[in-house]
Image (cartoon, rainbow, N blue to C red; front, side, top):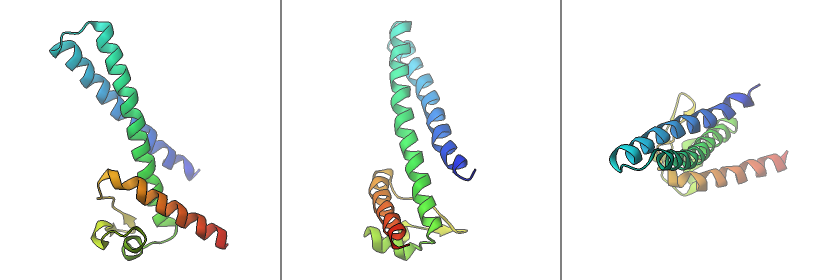
Length: 124
């Protein structure tokens, strides 16, 4: 049952992002650019699918990074040493990592942490 909340966050985050994107693109395409209704709906649908995909993977990366940090009780110093970034990039409040880094760094950090997790599992 613990895995379900971690799965729901990326899905809900992606759905909300997709809904907002659909509404925004539809009204811009139909209202401002005066495109026909079917074309506006098609553009809005395509953009909402793209926004869902991007948001889902961002939410998933955020959840995984935080899960690994919490599971292995990593400190900001350890994270900075592993990633080569500054200690101030990894603030931990109330035993929870706050991801303040730009999202473009998240895949690299996630990759490093997944390798660390694999190494820890191989030691056991």
